[in-house]
Amino acid sequence: MSKNIGVIGLGSMGYGIAASALRAGLRVWGADINQTQVERLRGEGAEASDMTEAALDAVAVVVLNAAQTEAVLFGENGIVPHLRPGAVVLSCATVPPEFARKMAARCAEAEVLYLDAPISGGSVKAANGQLSIMASGSAAAFDAARPLLEAIAETVFELGDQVGAGSAMKAVNQLLAGVHIAAMAEALTFGMTQGVAPEKFVEVISKCAGTSWMLENRAPHVVAGDYTPHSSVNIWPKDLGIVLDIARSSSFSAPLTAAALQQFLAAAGMGLGGEDDAAVAKVYARNAGLTLPGEG
Image (cartoon, rainbow, N blue to C red; front, side):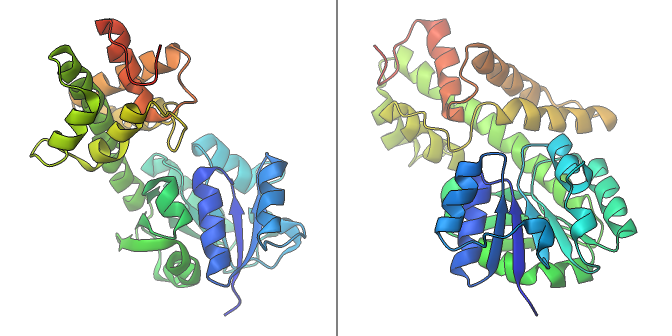
């Protein structure tokens, strides 16, 4: 099997996916609106020719949302018309399940396979080829994607042959992840009002029942006063918005999700949208008159 891989979207996650594919010995083409990222990847061994002229076996779409996914697949310069029959699209963005099903149907019309394959793990795991992937699609799609999946993922959850199951599971994950980040910020700043220093909060709570993966990963960013975006605030109004849209269509009440969403919207409104999502702690700090580490 030839192993020619395209990666569209070379942000922190997509670049890590592309780099991991290169390390695995795959031939990789990268595309992004930021040409600096494309040239950087080429400097690490990616192909210099045009992706649309390559005989790609798989293309990972690692963009922000459904609109961007549709644009790079079927827009004016979309990749699907340039793919050979039997090639596979890995759609990695967080999107509604119904959107994933529509994209799969359109790909099928072009004889292109589609794997509903949202990702989790953050930029560090993407760079190390250790992502978790929540995937659903046909057996043929899984087979076609296997070399790329093995290069970029530590765990691939195969959730059946019905496209949309992967996106549904990702929505469940994002509900928890967004709520946990907001809860971390609330707990850390609440502790500050009671004289609990942020670094002591991390030391103690990370070893107690109240911890979470997000707390252990994000709270140290607050302690360090470092909001370099590994996952930005702006991701959460989109992802939690998707969760609430799905919940609404199912007549399901999700009040914790709604409360967390409001905090991320407040952070974005403060101009923090491009910062690491741990910056949601600044919303609580501002409202309580607190000074977080690294702030004057």
